Length: 325
Ligand SMILES: Cc1ncc(C[n+]2csc(CCOP(=O)(O)OP(=O)(O)O)c2C)c(N)n1
Image 1 (cartoon, rainbow, N blue to C red):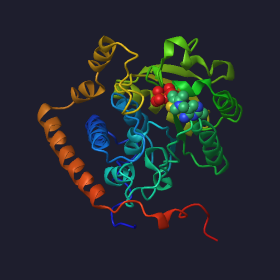
Image 2 (image 1 turned 120 degrees about the vertical axis):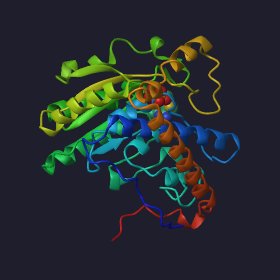
Image 3 (image 1 turned 30 degrees about the horizontal axis):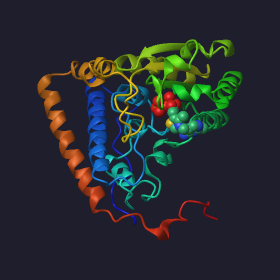
Image 4 (image 1 turned 60 degrees about the vertical axis):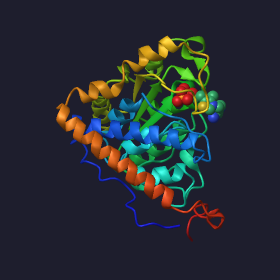
């Protein structure tokens, strides 16, 4: 069940991330998910699989200025967040394939991953559930008088939950070091945003006094810049910020959803705005090609690692449920 693999990737120092680092991470996330999609179709993924392909810039720009001691909360669509915060691709893959070397010993899949050592406080299958947890984490950071911050990633569907308003209220009232990142991929399951969300999401914090902005969520540099400002504000004790990152969900809601409810032309238009293209344009072609080859190797090694790990073990079912006495 245990394994000798490192728990996390070597993360760059906070603030030292370069456009090259960001491209590398986005490429890793893209190839990670494409590989998991193939594995799903081969029957190797025992649970549901929600892909973030096309949304990589939100996670990478959202995490590239964070320290390991900063926290994030993720969602049901969170592989890109996990990788960007420093999860190791091999153990993440093992989890998705239901293998005992996975982060949750293969018992949970992609919606049950928490890696406290790197500040990943959880992916989550319950829409909006990260919001109160993030609020609590940010409050803990404030009580501990650290200058760490919490970033809560959530989809636009979560703005319809009661927890959203509650989190905004408490975060503003207590000036918590919390950054709300609404990853607006324009669909809530099978429903386009246009038929169920009124007004501007980025302005939802206004009446609480929370500054907000809408960012091109396909532009990793724009995302990183907006986060830098929000992180500095939170570290300085000036309270929360709301960022709406506008992006697009390339795939169906989950892998088996063929997304017949939307126009192919709309999908193709969105794909032309591939966030990897603009990220790649900032670095030399030769360097980018070398990165692409390294990632292919890394993915192949990670997949082999995951496949060699034994399937989740029933004896592990009770592990991690109770605090050690
Ligand atoms: C509390 C709750 N209600 C409903 C669902 C069913 N559900 C799963 S994903 C989803 C849509 C979420 O949309 P969004 O928050 O925009 O995230 P996205 O899937 O677009 O990444 C819904 C309604 C759920 N998991 N949890």
